[in-house]
Length: 576
Image (cartoon, rainbow, N blue to C red):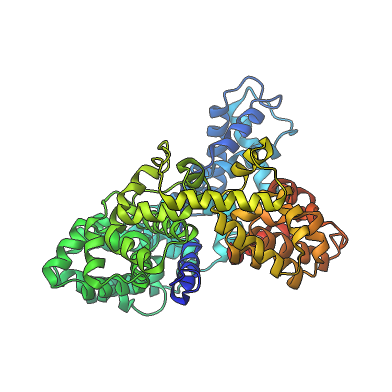
């Protein structure tokens, strides 16, 4: 059975690709960029402040800001102190605004008074230093700053809920994550937030230490009614021997958790394990099964393997064998890459299923080189590679990234000899002279068996080209015939039937067929979008759109419209 024509296998790649392109939470929202601070340092040591040390200047600015926020604006001591000491970007911007004021830079008190006077006559938006003091960068909180308010006391419940978190033991540098992910909890009326927290303590028996960390990891549990899925997860974990302390140790405040997804993952793992003892051992050995991306990678990986025919026991065995240090997301990407490779060399569907069922545990840990690289360096055709892999799948361990690939041992079998004769006959029909230097070069340029080259040649003829025209096309661009027949057909159909190019365009520019179908669709979808907005010339040649590099394409076409870069990224998620 052909892999390409098997609906179960053709849908598999699309299914797992959609799962992989989902955006993941990354980065540390509480870290400040150092590059910007370095540039500001240079500005603060300029003509205005003479020879003063920049740290001294910043210290004096902090004193003035504290005096303004505490004495003048009447903010609570802890809030004023935090805003003055923990908002470096706001602090530096304020000092830049003072450049040009007539200040005696030899008098510390005069500098402080100058900054205080400036703040009195130029009120600042207090939400900016407040949110920065919570650990957020300006790029993270700019859209969270209210448009109709400047002063913190205009928000009736903001500081009240801030103090609820503070008194519960959640540091200000952790509140930024809560504010960014669950802004509404800072707007709860008096007593609402405290009652929600108390409910988790009393109804679920959570300790203060555990709940304070849980709130930072999952601020959404404070929105709406009590999170039922969270309660179910904790109940299931407790039933198999994992207490609150173990959960606390495995939670990371750097990410956010979806307890509904985690409950679904736990339920799935319980179904594939023989009993609770096996489930307990599996989770103890690999807690990342439920904690990495809330268990979503586990479910996606299981779905990928199931579509390839793995049984429940085989799935359980796979999860047990995967190294603890291996990310499940990375594992899935490696398996998908291997699936693409086996599909590219046209291995039968049943053989691919067999390989994944028995060898996924190490295939997920390693990443194979690209198919084109392996075909070139191994010096073997697709059929030969399939044969080698089927005889010993672990041969692929020699073909991973970072290792030098050695050519496959030479073979003198009759099949190879027959294939070479067929290839020579094919090249003679193209017009090459036997035993000539051109023939020798052609043998290297036209990769593939003679039967494969003839089949692909015939496909081009069947699409409307004459044999003489196809001969000229493949002599001009031999790489056309290195592609599978269905790929050649799909490219020609896309260019001719969907885009409306005449066959003569492909004759004059046969090189266009060497570019991937994904590249064609991405470039033309973007080009069509620009045309609709009057930002692209409709008469551009096919070569102009396809040949240029991605960087040049962005510069010449994408950036012509302000929304171009974003639309291109959306197209990549949809098409690639």
